[in-house]
Length: 94
Image 1 (cartoon, rainbow, N blue to C red):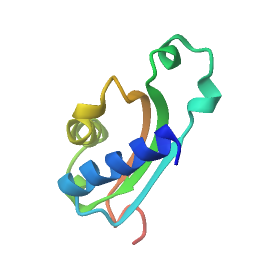
Image 2 (cartoon, one colour; image 1 turned 120 degrees about the horizontal axis):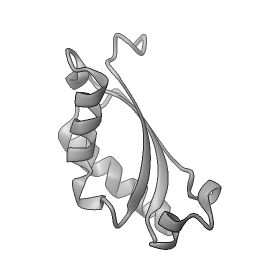
Image 3 (cartoon, helix red, strand yellow; image 1 turned 45 degrees about the vertical axis):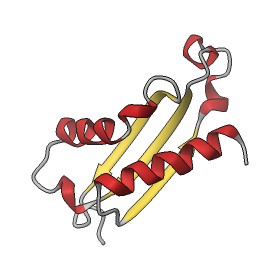
């Protein structure tokens, strides 16, 4: 298991503590940013797609803040950059 696969497993655990996840996909996009100044620090670039009922009634900024709060212990050491898609089950058609 690569270092970023281990990180993703930890991210999934922390997100599961904060949200009743209906769907979750975390992709490692670090290879797309090789040579980038932030990548040199060891932090990875990740793309996160999450569907959870807790996002109901929240705008996108509030959703992102909730995700950052859940992953706080990983920022900035393990997570240098994070692209987020956060939907309610209804928005995701679930």
